[in-house]
Image (tube, rainbow, N blue to C red; front, side, top):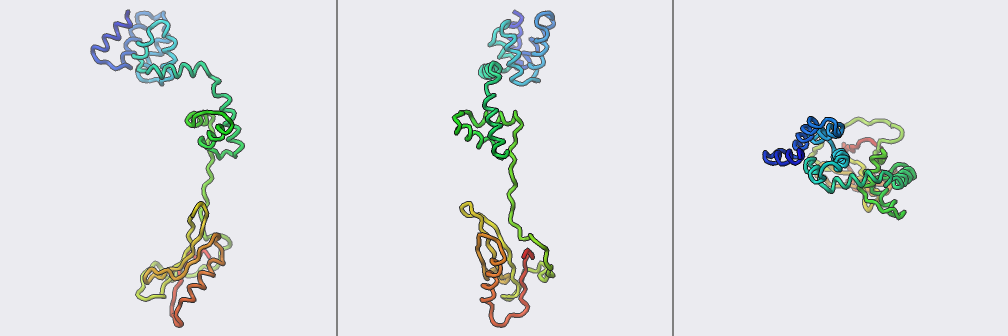
Length: 249
């Protein structure tokens, strides 16, 4: 009786579902302090927007024998499907236990490098049908985090440090004559999942590619082949040519 009274009254004055639950529980607890006082205190807090859907579902389940389920769900602001989802989940605590064990095995066998997508695929290969979202949730519960190795980028600064040449260019990248200022570098890129290395020389006079070499491996031979190609294009007499690099080689 008191339940229906507060439901209708709150609707008439457009009070939100959460506050309807709050006022109902408050009034009921005050008038019937000995009847389910512990649950009413709990649902008062949850109904005021302080609880999760799972917590609300648990309390609604405990009160559904005394009050209409439809009204409880309405006052709690809890969809019926959400309530039954958590109810089913609570009745099957070991539902995913076997799946969890398999996830841990696959995760450790692959040196902790598999994320939820690859683990889901492995589970399917083992005839264990489970959604990838469920696998992600279970991995989070288990505290399993994929350890991604950072990709090592190519750097020509390796090996023993040789003699450092003076920086003759000093960031003066313009010139009014060809074959006065050349710059060179090695760049790494991928083609069809294969690493390739391009070493080239540019003439700062007009941005022309003087010479280049494309190789699967960045080595000293690549540099010498590129330089030989560049020197063959030089005229007989060239004065004060500067070849600028990052001095990786």
